[in-house]
Every structure is written in C-alpha cells, then in structure tokens.
Image (cartoon, rainbow, N blue to C red):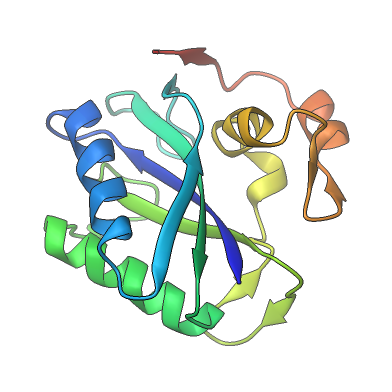
Length: 157
C-alpha cells in the first residue's frame, strides 16, 4: 500500500532531522520511500510562540497495514526522542499519516485521511510537489488550498 506522510520538525538542526527521518523510513522492512517534496519552512499552527518548522511530504510504499505504519512512524519519533509536552508544541520530529491509498479508516487510534490535513498549508503545499494536478489518491486538494488564508510557507530548496 502507498502512504502519504507529512514530516515536520522545529527543534535542533531541522534539515538534518528531515533527512534522518527519511533515512529511517527507508530502513523499515518491506517499505520504500518513493519520493519526497521539496523542503518548506512553515509557520507554526495552533501554538505560535515557537520556531518555524521545516516540512516535507513523502510518498512511501509498504506492505504494512495502516495501523502497522502508524506504529512504525511513532517508533521513529520515539527514536528521535520526541516528547509530547503539550498539543501543537515544539517537536524534534513529527510524522503524520495523511493518506493511505484506497483506505479510509476511523478507529480509536487512527483516522485516514488525516482529519485536519485540509486545514494545514504545511501539508497541502508539499503535496502539490508530489501531485502537481492536486489529485491525491482521488482526492482533489486544490479547493482546500484556495480556502486557506495565512499559514505562510516558503521553499527552502
């Protein structure tokens, strides 16, 4: 199954954190990182009194089911030393499952597509690098981008 992940960081060497995260994903068994968006610097959302984030979108293919992929992502976050002090606070790495190809899930631990992806420019803009037509696994994300105001994003490389 293919997955779209949103990866972000705003603690330490942000660019290195992103690179190391992608490397960690590529080391997962039965998993391949297919492609990544450009790197973006983005305003924090939810809690604004913190450093800006670096974000990318990544498409990965894995034989993991969605719950196993979530577990793998949480394991990578833990390996980076992520501590969840408060909602939307600073983080060394954040990996969100945004879409799972051909899957809609609503369970206690996982909702796919991600319930707030359409409200987050830091998710939507990098997705357009991977899907220039703005159609992600059959979902048109262009109306969501057009509906957003603020949430500045800028390309780093």
